Amino acid sequence: MSSAIELIVEGYARLKDRQSLEYLRMHRKRLAVDLKAKTGFDYRSSIAQVAQDIAALEAGLKALSSLVAG
Image 1 (cartoon, one colour):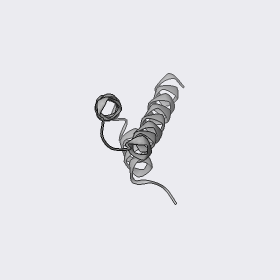
Image 2 (spheres, rainbow, N blue to C red):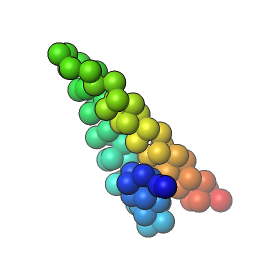
Image 3 (cartoon, one colour):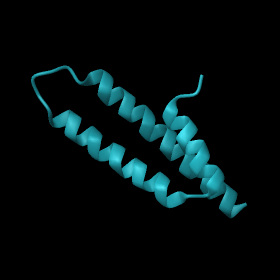
Image 4 (tube, rainbow, N blue to C red):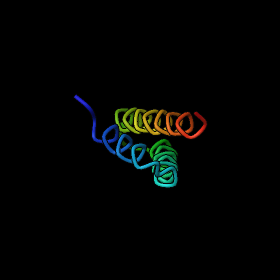
């Protein structure tokens, strides 16, 4: 089953909306930094999920780049 972020990335890639993909990636990266700085609770699963989101967004940006270049 596709995750929500994968469906969002697929939609933005289909629309060739690079700006939205880059914004989402930037947001997830800031979120990862914030989570890593927190203490007092185990945030490892949240950090792992955000890392997966970032990977999906980067794959979408790469696919979009190959569509534009090709």
